[in-house]
Image (cartoon, rainbow, N blue to C red; front, side, top):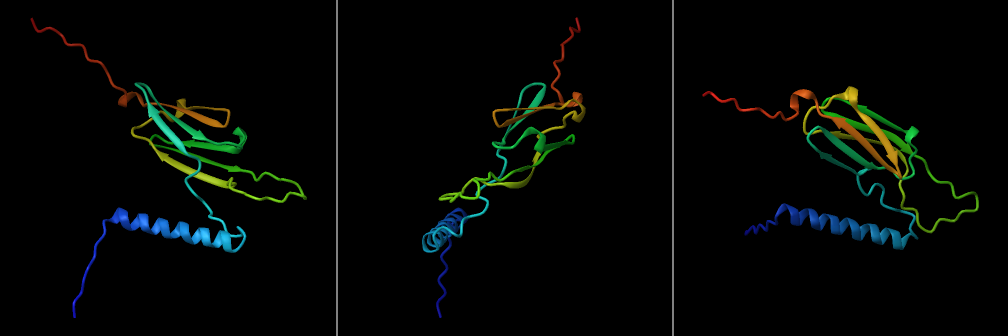
Amino acid sequence: MAVIRFQRPMNDIFAEMERLRNEIDRIFQEGFGGVFTRERTGVFPPVNVYEDKDRYVLTAELPGVKPEDVEITVTEESVTLRGQRKQEDGGEKANYHRREREYGSFRRVVSLPDRVDPNKVEATSRHGILYVTLPKAEDVKPRQIKVKSAD
């Protein structure tokens, strides 16, 4: 008896699994009139984190979420965003042809590259984007050292 092993790189296997999943989703959507739809397509809310000399800034896309519906918890090493995006009501006579916008509760924990001072954090919301300014802890900020002459 001969055993033939065919090994694909892992990224090929995952790509093939994703292709198969997409094809099954398409069959269910076409075959059942769109009754079955894919649930969560990604991570919500999507975030960016960048830094400058004194702070980190986290931005999060939160369209349709009121600032009062967002809870932000900060530790020295992470930021947790928690809230709820409420379902839009099209009324009693609404007949949806497509419903892709997600709604419901969310919770997202983002680890920070270094420690921050949780007591100095500020958050603002503008046009559906949340901006969280996270000042770096004093002991992790870069310091410039003057060189003294030994002469």
